[in-house]
Length: 488
Ligand code: SF4
Image (cartoon, rainbow, N blue to C red; front, side):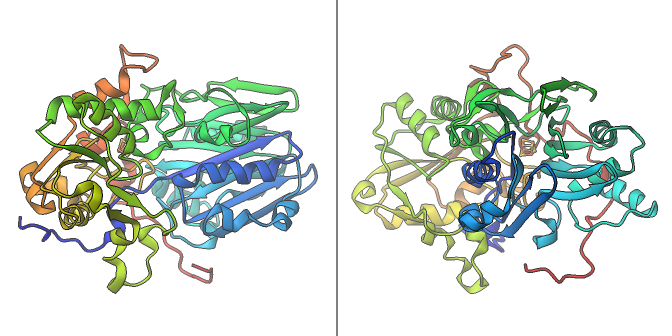
């Protein structure tokens, strides 16, 4: 493959997109304001849209919009309108369903027993099959999200309480889900039986909090209580918390990419600091792929801790040779094709003073299509780098994710079709190495709670999917809106 001539249709798709962030507060007079802060801390998990639903003891209130949390919930008037002592929030990056107003979560439904709202991080792998069955039974869908399938299954369940109906619904779905739900008198946190997506429980004085990551507890000063366990349903009401284990437990399979890229480095994930794990990944990467060089430079921001680990192991100077402009929106929202190729230049700039005449080790977290790496390496050479050796803190991404992370189709993943040598020549590096899966596990597991039997989902590197992909096997297509009146 010639340098830079891979079929790079769009810059915008050259990263794995985070999935979603969920948050909930129960029994706090500032529930909506705290939820807005929690969503702000989880902004990295979803930047397309956000929503909050609150309950004031009599009525539910809701506000959802496209955009960033600060823009949507920055107004005091909006927070005041979200009255009540309980609130659930959601940050969205669409992994199923189109990006329109009706797909913004938390979703809400009026049941016979009262209101029910649900926020979901993850992706169901049998949602289309279930949806077709539900439509045949007369269910009217308002969105194209897989989350609404859970709501309909809950609504038609013949169990007694909403919690029992939700559990009945979850026994029919397959996939990755961390959920925060709310009824008139309870808040419910659920993690799927494999625990693919994270969810933590926190406490703020007498209030309880659910959040996708512990960094969202820190922002409101809440104390970390514990991870919600895989397959666990935690129900909070005025009497406190009840832990239920109604879902068949399978082997634990937390998404390993949460450690590499998705989670914030200041989060603690299943007992391990994401920052420390990333540093250890850099150490392992250096041990197996170091070449003579002068400096180590991260591709900011997610490459930073791994580059620090790499520099520590090799005793090379660690330098911020690439500066990221934090005030640029995500590349995928650049409007027109004719300026989209500018994405990386808008976001990153190389510092000639640091780079000129140096042999550089450049550390990044992943290569998806490879188009971003082409631009960054070109930028390094234009800044005078003598050599550029690219080191990647994940194994080659060869398979798509079906559990809540937006990845391109498999044939668009550069590593699915090309050897490391070909990828190296395409991105224009002097050498290219990815961390091996064994070294990745060594880095992730060295402080895991169960070092003997660490279990993670690593399917995007190995193709070994821990959960069946039922919709895919049946050739089911995702539903689309037939009538689009919403603001896109
Ligand atoms: Fe995470 Fe990859 Fe598994 Fe998706 S396929 S859950 S991104 S490890």
